Image (cartoon, one colour):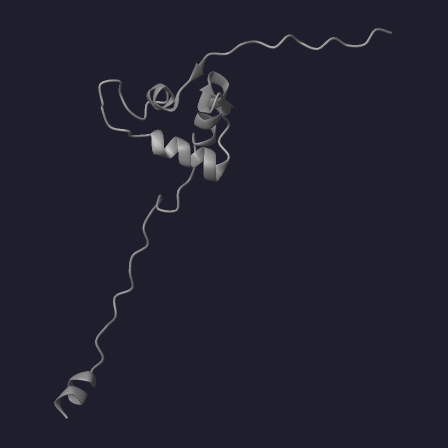
Length: 101
């Protein structure tokens, strides 16, 4: 019985942080701001987003970006949903008497 052969590695397209932010739709090409880039860097450093580091650069492949998008697809945030109504405190009848004394 022959040993199973390993599949050949496939070279994916890699994107820099700014290109990845554009690819994910976090900002547009015309936007000079760094919107989305900090979120991606923080995600890599703090939350374990998939990435590649080559030649001292942080790079994202198409499959990395797809996984990041899938992780945040239906994420429920703490501030989403119906807000609870606050309980309104009724004034006590004897507080007016205490204030006058």
